Image 1 (spheres, one colour):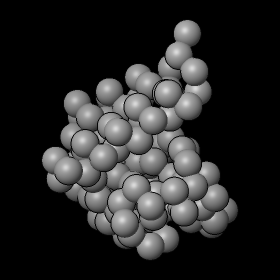
Image 2 (image 1 turned 60 degrees about the vertical axis):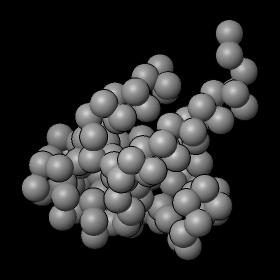
Image 3 (image 1 turned 120 degrees about the vertical axis):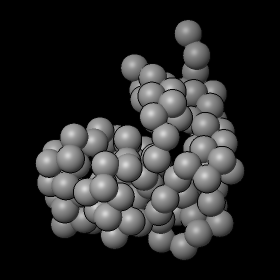
Image 4 (image 1 turned 180 degrees about the horizontal axis):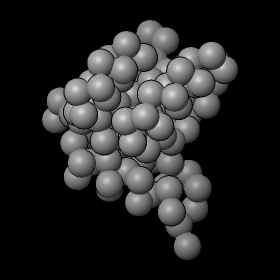
Length: 105
């Protein structure tokens, strides 16, 4: 069985690969816009996202049938993507999103 640190590293590597491929968008506004256009397959929320933001994302995700996962915190995403205050990450590719979801099973 794979240890937790190794699995977390694999998830982070998948996020980096999707980002390098241009398949990720960041932020609540980007998620809402792309979700309404049916261009989001998965949204990842930082574990420390505000309650209001989480509610807003969950409501839109429910209406547009987008899967929501929580993983890592905003500080860690800031380090991974060299971005400030990243709490919402939208996957725009079904293959990447399915592969990422399988890592949570």
